[in-house]
Length: 173
Image (cartoon, rainbow, N blue to C red; front, side, top):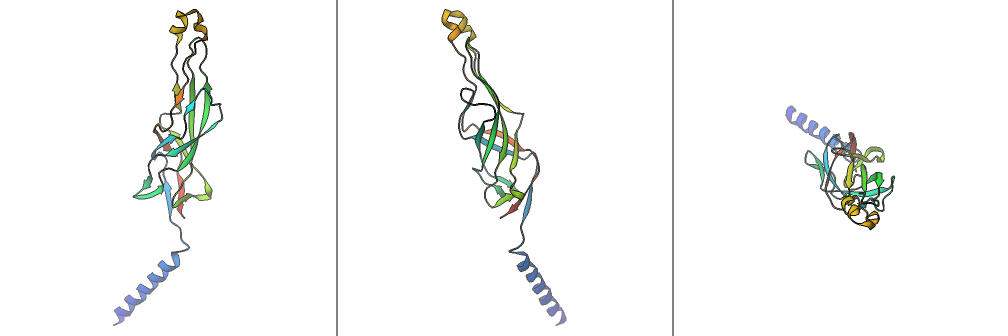
């Protein structure tokens, strides 16, 4: 009889702890550095019209999950930064562009503590695109000095492998 009351008492205490911790408690998850993700540019990025310092919108391609829990949903928005631009020039000189991933804003049922953003970096360094030169063509013709090379361009929707740049704490909403 005494063990039955003991069992009921322990069950009641456990229930109170669970009910008391339910609404006020928040689940926290650490998104570790070097976690691999896929992102895409939402628009073409070209050396023809981009300027250093321009922000370029990016989007997460696929969910980010930790232990089977989705912490950032597919489609989360973020940004990249144009670092250097060299437009295509006369005499067949090609253009080039260099872009660096910056951040991703968590979406879904988790958010970063203190409204931080998830910092990103491209695996293998900055993202670059070089145009093609047309020097030979420009030398063959007298008016070749007016022939430009092609622009450096990163097409929209091209998957880019990135990784989380630093550990970040996320909490359930």
